[in-house]
Length: 201
Picture (cartoon, rainbow, N blue to C red):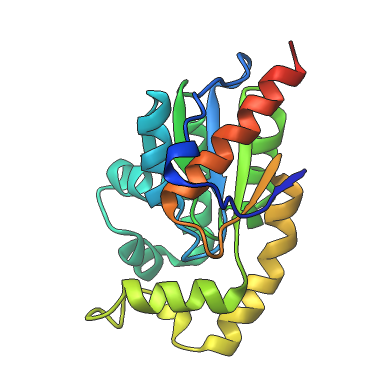
């Protein structure tokens, strides 16, 4: 796993062209709530000319109901099974940037799906829990019920601590996003992928 530290270059210096290793067909973004997986995923996909897919949105489209409704009607165990089938469906596509749900890597079946496919490259968007919590609070202003799991900050931090090692283990690349703009983060990812591509030539 390759850690990437914050990119402090000026805008004029951020000119790295996207050169992806040819074997990669799917870039997968993982991380806790507030990591910016969807925002960064859309930017990254646009930059490299791939499609963007949010796993939660894909699951909602497949089932015809929202994620909260799935939890309410079927419980978490059933939700996780449906999530795994949605992940398998998403990973059957080529040239996509896929944003996972925060809890997706907890399921062993999902870990296997991400690890056995040589065309999948997983990127962990990391930041300290206080940074992620503050981002969520700002994003959810006016909608206090948007993330029920954050109503108890102590429990949310325990959830973060449980998941963090999973994110790290699955990732081929870790980007420390605290203090970075989404554009900085995308450029850090592209720089790292360029380095991987050059090392294979």
